[in-house]
Length: 539
Image (cartoon, rainbow, N blue to C red; front, side, top):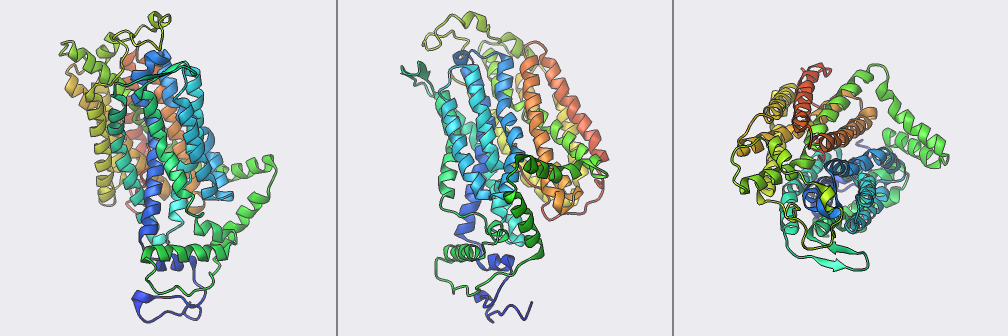
């Protein structure tokens, strides 16, 4: 290495005079405004995924009369964005690895926003379901790719810090979700759009607001190139060098000494990746592309990896079943409890509140949905307590992820998984019997914090699989997790009005089962660390 790289004696003004490794060149750009801009954009994209998928939970209680939604249809609508993500995540991941990260991220952000805007004007269950499916289908393109895009602008030693920075921005987005919902949905204005025959209400505007981060990030990324590591792996060396110089100018304000390296050293892994990508790009046959995608996935379900893949997939399925499936009805159920409290009912279980506040939509069929004289049972606003407890939940998540990130190396993954699964599971079961509304709501909040285990299971997955299978293993396990979201939301939608207690029993016992399954994760008793201990992913 010494005969290929010449360094200036002053360590503050290190300049490559000869060919350099790309990781070394990225380190030379320093860490400044360019990196912070990318981190902010990446974190906002992750937050956009959260807004697009979970924001609908605030819409359902106030839109049920406008769209004539049954509880079962609410479950379908809650889950449909996740269904879109499941259907497309594998495709977007493959295209991003063969066509380019930015090539996938930017168009899908714009398409997701367009689908979101269209969904805000829909007037029936089926129309909004179709448009929300496509919102999930397209938003998956950025959520599946943004980590790779952000990490490839940094050397290996800085990529973890950048990803954690984006995760912090994502955490802020989680906290802001109930605040945004409160500030928009609880407005009292409305206006008629005769051409579409709808009354445009605040809940429709909230849907658009949830899509705005996608539009803003898509526009921002128009000023950024594809990742330098991807471009270099495709043989675009000069373009990569120009990007590195641009990063350096941004980070130093153009005041630092000029980087004088004029070439990049080829790396064996990059060369192999380049060959694989070129094979994929040149492969025009759809059948061959599908075959190649299968060849990247099949090893996870063979030999010694089958047990590992099965365990992490089942765990993620169980976590998402509750953390997302039950969350989708959290604002709605809290709104029902508040409604009964306003009527003077002081003692009731969660399920009694659900049974007592059902809306008979058959009586609304012949009413004008656009009338301003809808029955009082039709909520136009959410009670403030729904927003308050949602804000508390998201704050607990943000703080909890930070605490787990600090203690996971010292404590180990197994104790954290067992404690969270058992504690949340027991709270879910006891929730059925508690008739003090305040205590019941807190047990509901605790039940939903099972999402802490998502990042821990991701950390287990990173440890369980080799480098060439690691990213695909995480992708597959999270895909099963999102399937759990779909199943969970639909289970609640089908059972809530008739078998409310069963929904909480299913959640509680499934989490306790996940706690038992955690003991069977290979090497779970060891505290050996991989470089990225805990990856925070969008819930």
